[in-house]
Image (cartoon, rainbow over all chains, first blue to last red):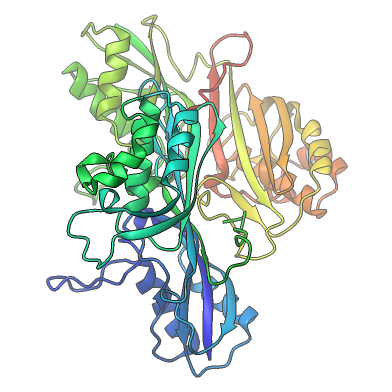
Length: 266
Length: 266
């Protein structure tokens, strides 16, 4: 039986999604894949491999990560959901379990993914800097021009060579990707988020898009130079890579239907 | 020179406010008083003692804790604020510094304090349980009757013997306290908070008031039995002590003016 899991996690205390066991370490690093896989093994009482749709970095959060594993054990999905969740630590949770075709591969079958980058801005000093939400937003003293950021965001949409928006030595064959949507939403005078969705992403791509839109918001990059930055195919033409804590993997899609809704509770 | 500090902190990773050095430990426990006092000593380059208005427990948060210390060093308050904050870890912050009379004592001069207890309710399972806010709210599967809780809350207001609402062996001479206000506010269908203010509180008093109102919200205690619970002068007559993570010290007052506003940014 193969199962598809929807996974939400607070990435603060994880070394990212992917299992890692440094040669000089006695135990593997605390990663989401490791923690969830270990619990599944315990619940189904057999060895399993948990594959994830997105290898989120250390400190990056998820509300709708997708994982999949196969096992011989037959457990009703509702009972499996409860059994896994009751054994998981407080910073990771399964929000859905579905039986799925044995051929399902969460990485190669993915049709699109959506990320959100959260920003707090206009904090004049470290008095008004984030405290309770410090692990979930990027903050800047600048008051951002959200309208200019939105103008720039619209110019990122489409099929482009995103060499300017990925880390050097990214190790991918092609740097052409399609961004389906890129929105900047102001939720109040001091908070905005950038929603980016696409059929696939290069390494650090969302965090560099966020960093570039941030520079536009500060007035340091003109919104209309986005096409030139793309054409440059040069990492130094774009803005900085923003830190991981502002980033959250919101959803992963496997069809062409409407955007999957995200659990509000997580 | 004596200074009055307003302090905000995320209590999750602190062993409460008060300094503690267990006899068998090499170093003191990580407490807010210890961390802030150490930074002040470094900034003013002399030995100081930081006194706090409320000895919050391990895991309890604060947006408006008040502290005070004296030193010989003359530093403009704005510069002192920045110097302290730039050396503090991310989970504690000074939001205000004021020079104050040498006689100022943050404990005995206090005229009233306000606490908030945050509750998430009607989470049917551990899927919708808090994830990103798990350290800041108490959660329950029950759907709470907030109107009944508010009725009960109003009956707690006033000068009463709060023996039923404190831990046994509390070590205080008198158990009579005055609750000035007790409100229950529903912010949406799944979140409410209890705001309690008073001239002084017994040990665990706010967390037991919250636990008793919770039982009222569940329909396990009738709202109108609050006077009987007070009259019983018996800890077992009231509801449970709710856990620390839902509690936040909002403000401390030293006069009879209007409620001090709380920094929204914290």
